[in-house]
Length: 310
Image (cartoon, rainbow, N blue to C red):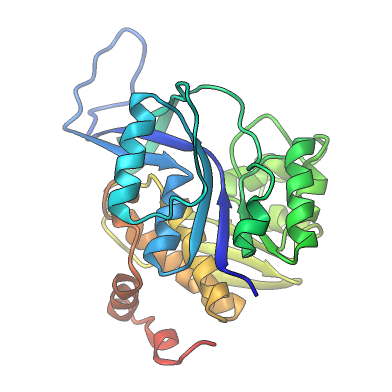
């Protein structure tokens, strides 16, 4: 019998979010932001999104002895994240991102210490997850960890990330073939496949993964489920910051699947959760289940909450 809904892998970051900039940062110019927020980032956002939606979630992550690790650990305790799989190293492990947000878009400057390695031996046996939410790591040691999770009976869900890799990069196709759900954004799907339209990119990815959920920002989502296409529109909201919206989308999708809902309803929940998250900074607006229900009702999409999912 499994003891966890989700095992999450991936690194922490500490995000310094500069908002309300008068323009795009450039060399030789000083821009003064109207607001600054310091928040946990990286995989923290999805850990918080899943936890707030009530899923039994355990995040396997390394922390160091540095200031940034300490800040994120303190916030994790306040947010009620499970510390069961937190691994404290007796050395600095600085992971920092400066986020500049302007005009509804964002850019990043990032620094990270050390290699990003799979969780230690025994992690899968400790929590026996129904789902492994896997970061986009296709090195041999990560592929071995994914195969071990599948052998234990877990289903695999992965987001994407920017990088100089394509479907032809060694390890990428095997990584995707191990997944049950893949959730890139439009730009990531296009870069990964070399296609120039999200639908064509999704079609190519769907040859490798049973469910492909393309995040389209304000345009909602395009989902392929076994060759069946699902389009979900996003409600109109006042955008404050888009940091963490993709992570919250993933949280909504996984909540839908874990609560026994069909792919269409999971995609609807994902779009609603992602839309609600952009109304505040970083992970601050990752909704609780009650907040998501209220938001769904306000936008005429509350029907799925009137029926009890198994």
